Image (cartoon, rainbow, N blue to C red; front, top):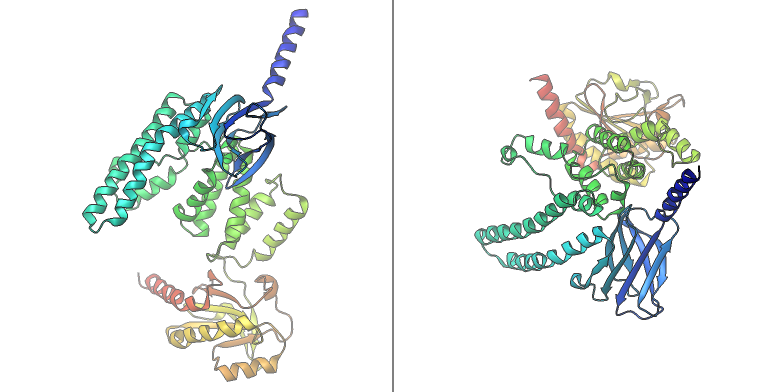
Amino acid sequence: MRYLKTLLFVLFSVGLASAQYHLNFKVNGLQPGDDLILAYYYADQNRIVDTAKVDGGGIAEFKGDENLLNGVYIVVLPKKTYIEFIVPNDDQEFTIEFDTSLSPAKKSVEGSLDNQLFFDFEKFAVGPGKEKREKIKEFRECETEDCKNKIRSQIKVLDDQVDNRRREIIENHPTTFTSKLFKAVLDIEIPEELKTDTTGLRYEYFRDHYWDNFDLTDDGMLRTPVFKSKLEYYFDKVILQVPDTIIPAIDKLTSHIENGGAKELYHYVVWWCTNHHEESKVMCMDKVLHHMAKNYYCAGKCWWADSSLVAKMCEHTEKIGKSLCGLVAPNMTLVDTTFIRNYELHKLNSPVTVVVFWDHQCGHCKKEIPKLKEMYDTMHDKGVEVYAIYTQADWEGWKKYIRKNGLTWLNVMDAYNKATYRKDYNIISTPQLYLLDHDKKIMYKNPPAENVGQIVKIMLEQYEKQKNP
């Protein structure tokens, strides 16, 4: 029993000892009393952890009773210059020495393999980096394509030198965080047989293997300057900007992260994908927002979101759920300016129908309606119809505006206040514009009015191809 108690005490003590950090920074060139700031990367931001003063021996000491989160950290000097270094999970007691010039040649470390590897790589990369900058200057002065190609080849050799040094570190020290970081910045190796492919297989391989070099099971990768830009490039440049392509890509990525147990990465990716696509200027991206709200927030998979936020997102999901791109537009039957004839949206036999909700007193509508009229006047004879819903109650003013501006399309309104279009289409402002195909499926939503003509032209071409394959 005495042996067991002793063993348990030792294990407990080791646990306490490991749950702390002790980082010393000897900065040559600073004065006693100067302040240093310890922070880490969080996506594209920095989060401050601690502050310390330089003592009489020129050392700033950072200590804490709990382990730091792993990742890439910075120490900020009084003049806002800084150096980067690594904090791994299992090695948080070391000393780094450097001077205010921040020269890699002046950096050294005691007690940290990760930072030894990190600083050694920095020292190596100085030479190729300097040569590359010189080659870029030469490239800008090239007057022939041969000159440019020659320098491109020389720059590639320099880049390969740096990447090969990264690969050496990854191969020789695969369990270090530094290796994870270096691997994450390496390009995906495209198989030789696909390098000259023109059928799309090269792109598909790159897309499907985009995350192969990135450890999506380690939350520490969020605390690097690499992750945010890689995530943004993936969804803005690699994945086609179509909701039905973006949504499966999000689900695949979040599932991978969730299964790997990286809760912080999962949290960030879900949050970022929701906000990024909500703010997107690309048409129909509200379909992505609807998916994120319904399948993540409203499904109870976002533990960080409070109940009021979840309630708002679920309410918004309900509001936009009937008018998403890809769905058949909600039907409506409205009366025209005679207050006698009714027109049902779904009974319009046209290859393309433009549905616009507008108000003749709305300033933005006054700018957009003439552009829409220009499209209609040139394309109505090709089968394009405009179903224009007036959303207010100034009927005489509405009819006067129609006559004055020669709006000869289908002008309709809810004369008896019985229509449900405000709820079905979530009409909270005007103008709102929907482009429907022959089957009244919503294909585009709120494109700029000046682009409607070009979009309608494409839709008509697609309709003809379907009709005459």
